[in-house]
Image 1: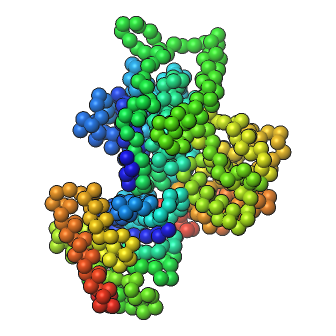
Image 2: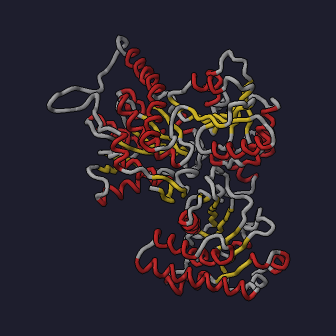
Length: 193
Length: 417
């Protein structure tokens, strides 16, 4: 079983992101369970949502305390909560930032963590460029597909088309695709932005 | 059709497949997504003929449900928590009048302190209301139970609550098989009311009944639930014939054949429990699980039979009878009266506290060793409790308990993650 935890703020589409991730996994014939941390939704408040992916039925109903992967939609959360709590030793980390891990105070963490499992992605900018709104969730899913190889970009595209339609869907597909390519390039280059 | 969808939305689709003619509901978390989706289906014409009635409160929701059901319409509503309490008087009226209303309860704690998260306090508070109560273990089962519920309610002319864990199920996106309309039409016959307000054949419904007949009316409510003990497994069997999967029934045993220790629970926590039991089985522990699907009627004989070969049981429940202990545990103990079985109660997950495997594994090992008090409070912060008790010893005006505990734990308001 692969467990993903997404941290962000109310309004950034954190819950939608886990739902889309679960749809992408479903489209690949896998079992997936997405669920929010069940709070009252408030814009700007820290939000956590979870997604489990497995090849068999998922029965477990506890929150994800030891994630295999973290997606951090808002780097300002790093100063507020312990987003890394319980992360597995070689877990994947994807952060929405236009800076490097070093620049946002994670130099020490990055130095000791498996480099190929870390990526920084300017997802808010990509969202603004393609969707016209500073929503980082879908670009991060594209980036996550590239970083983890857990799901295909095509599956993310299917999930986008299930959640959105028309121009919004087109913009999101373009954003996810650019994000995917950027993270791929980053991984080939061996550096995290 | 297989779909990756939200539990609430899947339940709304299942309810729509049952062709309700009246839906009346007042939104309350975590039930809201269900009635929102149904409202959209009625407005778009996808669900027709059906009237969606916006009401001003839960009391009105159940009152309108009573009226429409008495008029012969297949009627659905949904609620949770304080909403269920607010409609309580009408809840008793619906069952007392024998009206086959189906209601989803998205189980949630009852305040104060106000709390929107899951436990089973709400529907269990209506335990003796005369409504049947079925508990879903998964979202698939929640979907399937609604289809079975309309059939059961209408056959017996008695109302039924389909209970599903708030947020944990209602807000989870999962793989769910949404039945085909033709299958549902085969399984669920058209509603033929036993009683109906019909201008062509006028009757009154709701007579005042004195001591001369009240006991008989009440007894018949009980007798109908006893009939339900026969019908529930029958309808689950017929469901499997039409839809090809096991859903519903009275109880669901898991790996109990040679189990010395059996864990008993209701709802979605059964999934986590089964994972723990598989791990313990792999370590050589003789442990199994008994899921209770039908809480009312309570299947005394089925529970007794399932526990016939074990040595001890632990009831893990998301509810607390304050001043007493377990609510479900009391019923289970009644089922095994005279058997000499050793039984324990664990109260867990109140107000949405997670019930992790890491807490269940040691709890089950202690149950196996019979090393538990009669009632255990899983993951209770005893230091926080003792601090408040100490505060009360030292100060007459010790202040509000909830605020004190939050302050002691360093949170200024309920934690959202």
